[in-house]
Amino acid sequence: MTHVTHVDGPTDSVTARVPAKVNLQLSVGPLREDGYHDLVTVFHAVSLFDEVTVTSAERTSVIVTGEGGPAVPLGPANLAVRAAAALARATGRRGKAAGQGAGGVRIDIRKRIPVAAGLAGGSADAAAALVACNELWQTGLSVAELTEIGARIGSDVPFSLAGGTAVGLGRGERLTTALVSGSYQWVLAFGAAGLSTPDVYAACDRLRAARRTKDGQPVGVTEPQLSTALMAALRSGDPAAVGPLLTNDLQPAALSMQPLLRRALQAGREHGALGAIVSGSGPTCAFLARSAESARELAVGVTGAGVCRAVVHVSGPVPGASVVQSGAVA
Ligand code: C5P
Image (cartoon, rainbow, N blue to C red; front, side, top):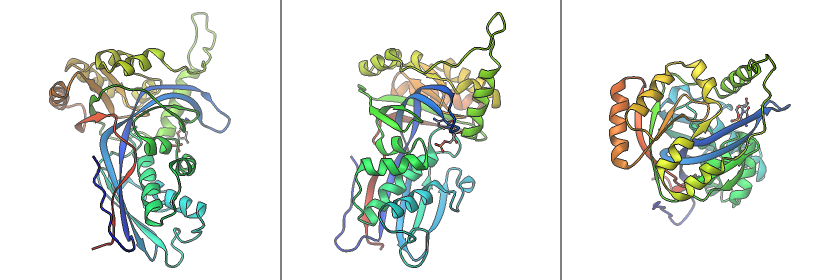
């Protein structure tokens, strides 16, 4: 249960917490004219959280600490800054969040979600900034309105707001809640270096363009379909049914860019994973465990294999971005 502290009087500072995601299914359609791909994906929020605190300030600034902090841009390219500015524009606080005069916002991002890892860390921070600024400025936008603004910042922002388990269509921004029983135990293995999402999609397109049938004809890209078997397995709540049904069309591209990931996936399987998959555009590998106990053993085994930078044990589904503290600055 989330603890929310409300104090009387003006709110100077708001903290929101936001989870990472893994994709249980990631089916990628053909390249669209706008440079995106139509997806059929199943998002699943897991208990690895970033925290974003927004504080009223003269000028807008951003500070990033924690996992991969130095790799996060601090200027207007920062997704949390863009989210705050977009909310300010949408609600008539034009210019203020951009730091012109009083009414800026200091954005403090404490990262545990690695950067460029296929876990939607940047989108998560944008979602947390939207939720936190909505509270700080008392702008009163609904989740649906925040979702509309968030979708323009990044394809995964709507899911970072929603959390849980959801089917994503379009760029991944059109969401429907999925019916899921129980809780799933995961081990996430972080890669040594990040992967750029556009680069992985581009590699996926190149690999597909090179595919040929036996008689040398190009193999077309079919429209993605939701896996009804995966949805039924999720409803059953049985991780042993879910594990073999995890799929990711971006995995061959991620593996072509970081061949060592094959060894990480293999290590997970050898140490009892029910399913082993690259998360999103990678390079994080996600391993589904039978129970919390086997997740701990899996984490020790994968760590011992020495094929990744760090390993964490998480569970899902968990809720999306939410305010955890709100009050006057001490
Ligand atoms: O929406 P977002 O900015 O997170 O997407 C980053 C990049 O990932 C896009 O510029 C595009 O290259 C790729 N992408 C895609 N199809 C999607 C989502 C992302 O090709 N559905």
